[in-house]
Length: 496
Ligand code: FRU
Image (cartoon, rainbow, N blue to C red; front, side, top):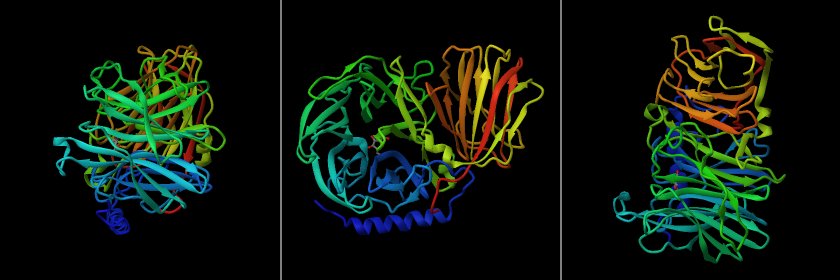
């Protein structure tokens, strides 16, 4: 049932976001990461290739830098190097999505892009106090821009508080939908529905129940094949932090298993983080036309307000697009898509170096957005720690991306970052004689890729004032660097 006119709501939202945009502070605003022009972003939605363009939608609140009634923002690209800002795609307008057009996904079907999303309502009309009323809805577009909502396709069993985030894919003529559920006994589950036409859906089975009894809801599940296995990615709500794992208010992880239509999912691995950083959530992937599995995640937080939220007029960004592959060890590897190199505007090959504690090496000055590729000869180094001080400012602030040879881990350490949350995050390093790092530095974030992508660490970082440098340093011993390459990166925006 329509309760508001979507066209009117979209026009109102565009005016609001343009107002915020005119006062946006750009000190931390991303150049190489997708973000709305202003306001709030969370999960990537509807990732697809349709109409000759890559389509990326996202959870968006255009009225402020805080989370609020969700809209779907939109950007598109022909090459995934540069991106075009598109009009906001959907706003609350039906009774069923009155309090938010929540997360969902897209399937290209001939001339149409079909999207599935969660229509969200607060039971009491104000907040989660009395629970949610959530249903899976369908909408279609023929140009990727103007959507026609078609209403509810999956109703929730009465009383379940969390029932959301449909991820849909097709195999042959059959359609599959997974979404996250909080069961009647308060456990996090992923449910599977199937359909012959994408319109009428039947419950198939409970595909997965998180063995962790603290996990009461699995947000934003994604389910995709890599090789002859299936990856089930999800974001459990509730797990307690253990060691380096589940340190964030919100964490994204995955299990790998066997699955075929009509069968149960058989997990072959334990839960593993998709990314070890402070901000990486709600991974959503799609199959590119050339068969690559590419995914986007949200870098932001519901629990730790990003520093830009206070007075800069915006909050959050998407991580750079990653290509996912599966190792023989059944661990998912993630590297920036090959296209990302298309943003390199200038490259300095700094070559081999032996770095000592009293002589750090300047890698780049006046940094806006950059990528550094570094190979450390671990066998030939004595340093206890070696790394990059990124977004280092004249007043002595910096974020440290460092290999710790005692712990055999790579850390992103924000204890000396200018603004925002402190603390560090840390990924394990596979034993070996050398360590390769790829580090993407933007105005408000750092993403670190280890080796062949076996681990990644992504965090928001908010620098102090002044020009920013990247420096290579060691602590307690020397470091032998066999290769050091620094790239300056251009902006991803075609229209800004
Ligand atoms: C996860 C999430 C989803 C929901 C959306 C609402 O980040 O809570 O479960 O659909 O955000 O914005």
